[in-house]
Length: 77
Image (tube, rainbow, N blue to C red):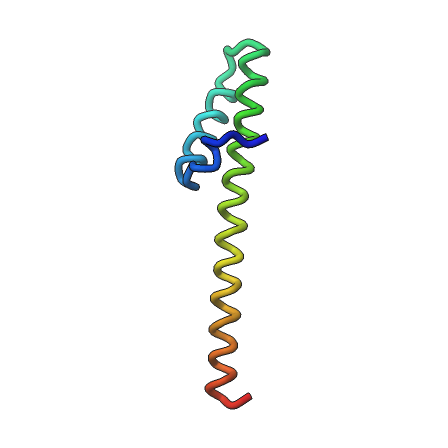
């Protein structure tokens, strides 16, 4: 479940927070409850990043498709 705050996070913000979550998990020294909460937050942040990257890929694919169509029109194909 994604919180409202996650929906407003930019890619870089989500990525940076995810890096911090991973760093804290790797460092250890947290309780089981804290570790689980960090892991869950990391999963949420990873989903945010994935959505941003999927959106970027879709925009690139659309731009490339438009470019291909324009080239075909110019060549009379």
